[in-house]
Image 1 (cartoon, rainbow, N blue to C red):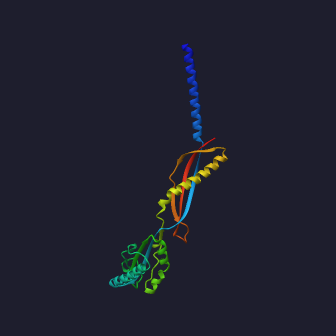
Image 2: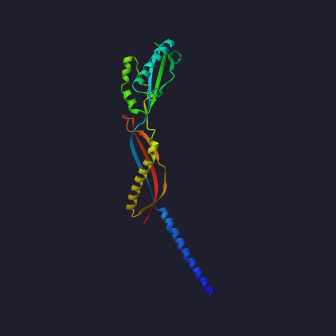
Image 3: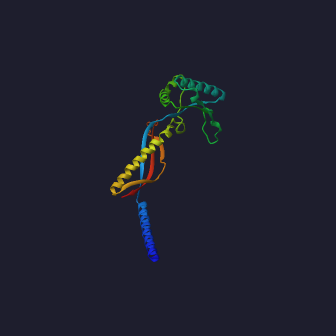
Length: 232
């Protein structure tokens, strides 16, 4: 009798062991069945911050005269900005940059003016529409004898979108939905069904100008990578 019980227990153990092995193999096979897709979400938004450097230059041989001239020019620009709605705290007057043309030992030219002084007033504001309207009318300063010069790439007007943190969760959800749509299509084509998410990254966000002519309109973009398991 004892031998019969022992044999029955042994047989039962072998059956359970066989089932465990089968389940393990099936589970391993299921783990190998997965699909990795990318989800994209894009939005166009208007910039909510602008930085506008306003540069002027003074040429001459007498530093004291140039200093007085710079102060007059700075006062005219500040008055122009304040009269058009720019707040005083949005205006920063930077220290002027002085170049002594005669101090350059490699310059063999005879200079008409010894000193070249660049003055920069920087406007930083969240009222982008107002600043853009003033930029379009900066030619009015010419009537007051103020010539705003082109400062080149380093002194260009810069537009930013600083509120994008608030839209990140919504954009991530949209990117994941788009990824799921792609994965479902793949599963359908492979006679499978989409299962649970195995891995997902936080997404890579980027903000760029929509185009070169409208730098105040930004394109916010996020790409996320999601891996789904598949089942029959």
